Amino acid sequence: MTQHQYIASMRRAPLACFDTVKHVDDCSAPAYLTPEQVNDFNIALTFLKHYVGSAGTFNAYRREVERLLQWTWHIAFKTVDTLKRDDLENFIRFCQRPPNAWIGLKKPPRFIESKGLRISNPEWRPFVATVSKSAFKKGQVPDKRNYVLSNGATKEVLAILGSFFQYLLLEEYTFSNPVALMRQKSKFVQKRQGLTKVRRLSQQQWQTVIETAQSMATENPQAHERTLFIISALYSMYLRISELAASERWTPTMNDFAQDHDGLWWFTTVGKGNKERQIAVSDTLLAALKRWRKFQGLSALPSLADESPLIPVHRGLGALSSTTHIRSIVQTCFDYAVQRLAQEGKSEEAESLMDATVHWLRHTGISDDVKIRPREHVRDDAGHSSSAITDKYIDIELKERHKSAKRKRIQAFKKPGSN
Image 1 (cartoon, rainbow, N blue to C red):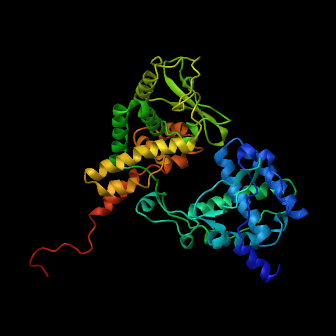
Image 2 (cartoon, helix red, strand yellow):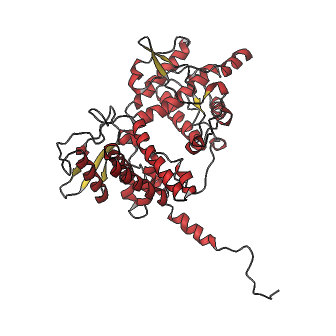
Image 3 (cartoon, one colour):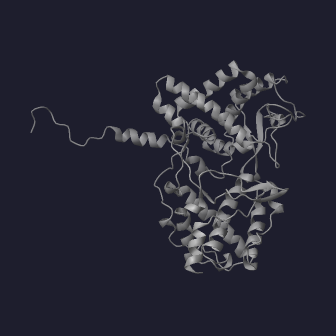
């Protein structure tokens, strides 16, 4: 590697290598790669295909593996099988402060159609600078100079690449796992004492959001009865957005709500890691389901034969498959709720709600229920792999801890006239 080659690579953005889940079987190695780099590409593609069952997991693994390959080929001028512990540490430092040419200000698709072929999109970048939703609404725009890799994102990089190198090790493509050999990961990932703050709605915000959704549904049922049901389901059953949208692996239908032999209602979903689970259905959600079905001209509750889509498209036939569309539906309700809070003089609540995402509804439902339900019940309904994850949502101890500290004195109390 010459100094000129290194500088040129830092100043030139690489092209995307791996397409979407839908097109991954059609991926082929870029023509500019050397035979050794083609081997890297092929083994990485085989690894990624293990995760096509979940689009979210596939996208996360594709992002980190592709960044590693691009850095290995264009910055380190090596191949994956030659990477050592020091190389991985240099890669993490690179991800924390990538060159401007590798940072984008938007998220265009990796590949585009051109003359009947799918080609790498020249607008795509491995890293993207962003700003919070509230900052964007105030006129702030993303700036490459402010790009940072968060603590959580760094942990995810290490976890995914650890799995990747473990796979390469098992396939005898490499003979060590450089991520596992990194003795001081703590210099890249900060450890926190106690619980990580859960991003959720306050009681005031949630109450305003659900009341806003109810008002929208009453005033314009054709447009917003679906909005009300989506928000109710996301909160009450702790659903991820991918568990409401139709996909190649699963389409939620009305008969996913079913009654057992004891007369209890359950909802069956296929969640993270392609795992099926049953969620206990509350009386209030059952009422929300009845309202949603009545609007559609259906019977009060579904039969086992009712395979109509749970969330149909607004116009036409079939189930809603776009997670982007679901986000837009929820965001519209959030926006109206922000306006309502602002009009009521609750400016701080309004401003923090501007940063809320759809996933906050899942966090809010779990956080509210873990106060009143056994944590094992919440754990199983949420699909958590362990109670330790559910414990992150318990903030009762934090409140008690703050309460005990609230009246602490700095100076001892003295009676008037005492020395």
